[in-house]
Amino acid sequence: MLWIEEVVVPSVLGLMEQREARARQDLESWTEVLEQAQAEVDAARERFERARVGCEELVAVLAEESPVSAPVSVPSAGSGGCRGRLEQF
Image 1: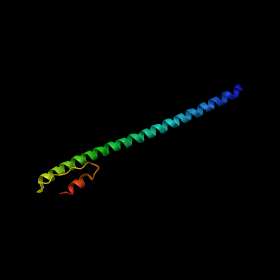
Image 2: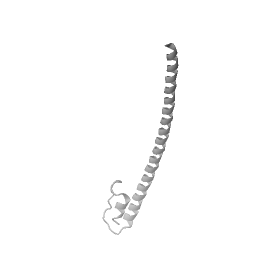
Image 3: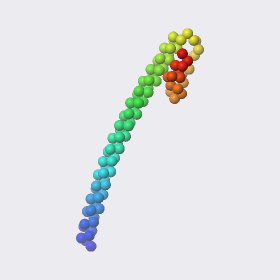
Image 4: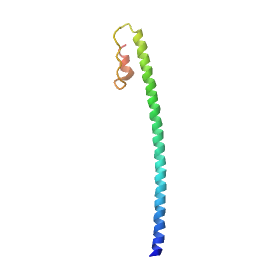
Protein backbone atom coordinates (compact mmCIF):
# COMPACT_ATOMS: atom_id res chain seq x y z
CA MET A 1 0.00 0.00 0.00
CA LEU A 2 2.87 2.35 0.68
CA TRP A 3 4.07 1.98 -2.91
CA ILE A 4 0.64 3.09 -4.26
CA GLU A 5 0.60 6.18 -2.05
CA GLU A 6 4.09 7.17 -3.23
CA VAL A 7 3.02 6.96 -6.88
CA VAL A 8 -0.43 8.53 -6.51
CA VAL A 9 0.46 11.42 -4.22
CA PRO A 10 3.26 12.85 -6.41
CA SER A 11 1.01 12.46 -9.44
CA VAL A 12 -1.83 14.37 -7.77
CA LEU A 13 0.56 17.03 -6.54
CA GLY A 14 2.00 17.37 -10.03
CA LEU A 15 -1.48 17.84 -11.51
CA MET A 16 -2.33 20.43 -8.88
CA GLU A 17 0.89 22.32 -9.60
CA GLN A 18 0.09 22.30 -13.33
CA ARG A 19 -3.43 23.59 -12.67
CA GLU A 20 -2.05 26.30 -10.41
CA ALA A 21 0.42 27.38 -13.09
CA ARG A 22 -2.35 27.52 -15.71
CA ALA A 23 -4.62 29.42 -13.35
CA ARG A 24 -1.82 31.91 -12.65
CA GLN A 25 -1.28 32.42 -16.40
CA ASP A 26 -5.02 32.93 -16.92
CA LEU A 27 -5.11 35.44 -14.08
CA GLU A 28 -2.16 37.36 -15.50
CA SER A 29 -3.74 37.36 -18.94
CA TRP A 30 -7.11 38.63 -17.69
CA THR A 31 -5.39 41.21 -15.50
CA GLU A 32 -3.61 42.53 -18.59
CA VAL A 33 -6.89 42.66 -20.52
CA LEU A 34 -8.52 44.51 -17.63
CA GLU A 35 -5.66 47.02 -17.44
CA GLN A 36 -5.89 47.69 -21.18
CA ALA A 37 -9.66 48.17 -20.95
CA GLN A 38 -9.21 50.56 -18.01
CA ALA A 39 -6.68 52.57 -20.01
CA GLU A 40 -9.17 52.81 -22.89
CA VAL A 41 -11.92 53.93 -20.50
CA ASP A 42 -9.63 56.58 -19.03
CA ALA A 43 -8.73 57.85 -22.51
CA ALA A 44 -12.41 57.95 -23.54
CA ARG A 45 -13.30 59.91 -20.39
CA GLU A 46 -10.55 62.39 -21.14
CA ARG A 47 -11.76 62.83 -24.74
CA PHE A 48 -15.33 63.27 -23.51
CA GLU A 49 -14.28 65.90 -20.98
CA ARG A 50 -12.30 67.84 -23.62
CA ALA A 51 -15.28 67.69 -25.99
CA ARG A 52 -17.65 68.84 -23.24
CA VAL A 53 -15.44 71.79 -22.35
CA GLY A 54 -15.04 72.68 -26.04
CA CYS A 55 -18.79 72.55 -26.53
CA GLU A 56 -19.41 74.79 -23.54
CA GLU A 57 -16.88 77.29 -24.89
CA LEU A 58 -18.52 77.21 -28.32
CA VAL A 59 -21.98 77.71 -26.88
CA ALA A 60 -20.70 80.62 -24.79
CA VAL A 61 -19.15 82.29 -27.86
CA LEU A 62 -22.27 81.76 -29.94
CA ALA A 63 -24.45 83.10 -27.14
CA GLU A 64 -22.35 86.26 -27.00
CA GLU A 65 -22.57 86.73 -30.78
CA SER A 66 -26.24 85.82 -31.08
CA PRO A 67 -28.60 88.76 -31.74
CA VAL A 68 -31.30 86.96 -29.78
CA SER A 69 -31.29 87.95 -26.14
CA ALA A 70 -32.97 84.76 -25.02
CA PRO A 71 -31.12 82.83 -22.33
CA VAL A 72 -29.10 79.86 -23.51
CA SER A 73 -30.05 76.61 -21.86
CA VAL A 74 -27.26 74.26 -20.94
CA PRO A 75 -28.63 70.72 -20.75
CA SER A 76 -26.76 67.99 -18.96
CA ALA A 77 -24.23 65.87 -20.83
CA GLY A 78 -26.65 62.98 -21.30
CA SER A 79 -29.47 65.02 -22.80
CA GLY A 80 -28.39 65.72 -26.34
CA GLY A 81 -24.91 67.02 -25.80
CA CYS A 82 -23.51 69.82 -27.89
CA ARG A 83 -25.81 69.23 -30.85
CA GLY A 84 -28.87 69.97 -28.70
CA ARG A 85 -27.33 73.18 -27.45
CA LEU A 86 -26.28 74.35 -30.91
CA GLU A 87 -29.72 73.84 -32.46
CA GLN A 88 -30.96 77.00 -30.79
CA PHE A 89 -28.60 79.16 -32.87
